[in-house]
Length: 425
Ligand code: PLP
View (cartoon, protein in one colour):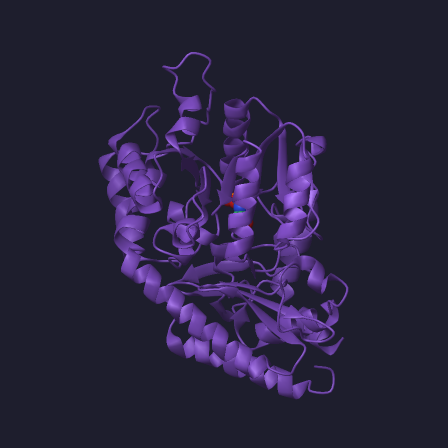
């Protein structure tokens, strides 16, 4: 009540902007996740690891563009590359360029892929990977997991739209993530199985970490059926220098990528075993077409290569995720004994408010019945007031350059919040 009233009073320009924008955009914006009640904040500027809203409040940016903003808002190497590429090469040349090849080489080397192809988003990467798997196996159906988010038309979680532009009949959803017995049973029972698609950490599903035994078991179950095992690393490739699949020894057939790998620009990619990726080779009879005007956009190729090759080097990646682990440990310490639970891995963090403040969350179903959206909303309003931009669902995607002091201040703000509302938390 009171926190929401203050939010409305403090953000008149965001409120007016929302009402105006709804005249041109249904709901006032183009990304469903960005809609929040009573209205979303409109941002006017980002710099380094901060954002400013229309009403001129400054925030530490913990949204991190849902993990695509890993490099922050104004990394000098990214600016330099954009400027240099624009002047030297131009925007988009309607042709392959050396930038495309150079970035492909780097992606293959870093994430141990035989071959890779570029796309414009993580959604596209997954759709194309599924097309490749179907073409390769000559089969149709796909197993996914409850709580999974593989893109705008490939979401299988609660509170996000069910797939409405893909044929639902083709997807079989395992009702619980991290439940190997159940996964084995479901996978074994599916006829015409082309692929099993899984996130090593369910990102949008609550930042829930997949166990190694579970993920390896799922791979084995897929192999037994002759299906393609696709690891969605759109979010998790940032968690280890070669991605989480290599780090955990998951040996996927295909990997899908995106987010920060475009250096902040629109990007997706998918790749893996030559035997499967060969379906896209136009020199092979019966090959699969894969088009997209912006697939190899010059600017994105150049900027992506800088992002991965010069900025997010293996050493930087390791240090950054250690910083994330320490941050999560400190949050867990202050949350201990309250209704707040902290999940995630490395630089990806999930905050959950539940009836009993669960210590162990292994799948969305664990928290569904016990969720306390009222506490989550209160937390969100009060964190905004304290100067922290966090997604309403409690997801934090850390930004590389966020100063240690800002992380410390957030831990302190969470502590103060929990103490202030001790009676209900
Ligand atoms: N896969 C995962 C695991 C994601 O987290 C996302 C985006 O949040 C996607 C796919 C879709 O990527 P995009 O939003 O670039 O289409």
